[in-house]
Image (cartoon, rainbow, N blue to C red; front, side):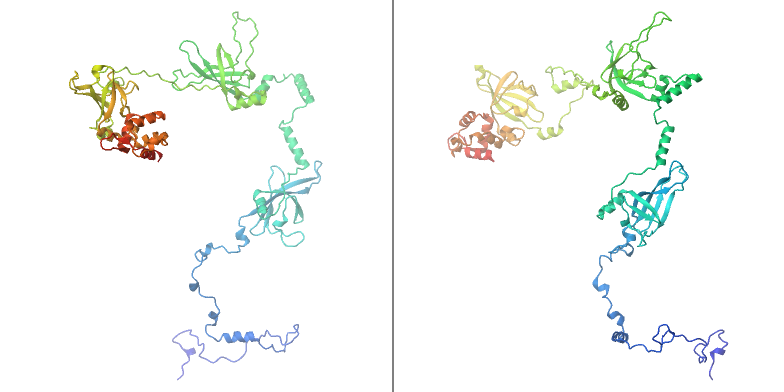
Length: 622
């Protein structure tokens, strides 16, 4: 039994679409879009269309192939790989050819111009010039015109033309940047504008594109603007009064009983709040006097003077700055012993009496003017033709030099530095020592053998040893026992800092070398030799003791490089070397000869050691 879903009650509202046969009958009007006639004006075309072309047949056959759309597509991006454009986000990519709205974003060309407007029913003008600003937006080719507002003009001003694209007067497209030139005229909606200038960006834009935009023109002024400015100048008193007007004004004052304005009142009106400022000083030569500095104020309004003291910090003076209160300053002050007696007043000080570098008399005190401020300098330059800067005086005080007393001489008891500390502080402290030097050089003793050369026969055989202690620069002298000398051996001078009479300072390391004569305890000692430890100590420190530096000693003998005896491979004797150096004008000491012998000496069996000359010359030339 066949079921009909259209009559099913199990599912209410279900449709029987596709279960029944379609109903017969044509309820719609059949439409056609084909023309069956060759006449296009007819609604019926009975001609058959032409046969399809071969290209149409190939395209129809191509559609039968599966995947025909991807056969002629571009290769996959996965095979090509990412490019530089793929690394940039899509919302930040710039096209290669940028559109105008992106390339010229926020770029506006600004031109200045005016147009002439007719004025009727006015006797003072028949036309006026109205100035406008023309702004052309590069991003979309629109432009707008604005007129600057003028106060109390009585004309609606502001936005003159809203932003829009403006067609040309000839109807050939819209107005563009090529239509604007300084000095040219442009017609916008039947109104002609004359362009007089442009701003800096507009001029730069045209120059970058190789276009001459033209030079700016001066602004034109109409007759009304000229008369308006002149009228306002007259109302504000900018023009001088004529002679006839002045006479008429004075005559009116006399007729009405009003006294004319005096000169003092006019001076007050013209120079109110104008003050000349000078800096001055007064040298008080009275006992316990000193130099006192002042500030002088001259008021141009009434020719009065005020003088204030300029106290320095910690000057010791009372904080009363007013030296002379404001009032007239006479060149000569006199008093009248008889009350009521008339006498001529002394002349007043005027601006021409104040000159920098000069002086003024203030109640018997001579005040020297040494400087003034910028306003005062400009006032004298403009009105009196005086350059106040030329007379400026340098009043800077010289630095004080405190005289320091020399310490008293050492009395010989104890060490000198201990006695010096007692003169510098009430509670003496032990002098500071160089601990690093003390720890490194403690125990070092440099011994030099010497003999007394005072010319006494009984002292010729005496031998001494000078011991120098580099840890604290102290010196001691010991006498070596000599048989039948008649002198007791032992300590000749105890260990202490001994002064060198030749230098005035204590003995230093560079004062002792072989061949030197030093004076200790009023006795001259000639150093004849040094022990091995002393020589090694000095050679290890050539920067402190140049006589122990073989290189420095060789360079001193450079003038002997061409001498034949210096080229002898057998060497030269020490005494002969000293003679050659003396003849060449290069005197050398015995310690330098010892240094050369220790470094370049050669010694044969049973012969005196000699200095190898070629080695000395080679070392000195290097």
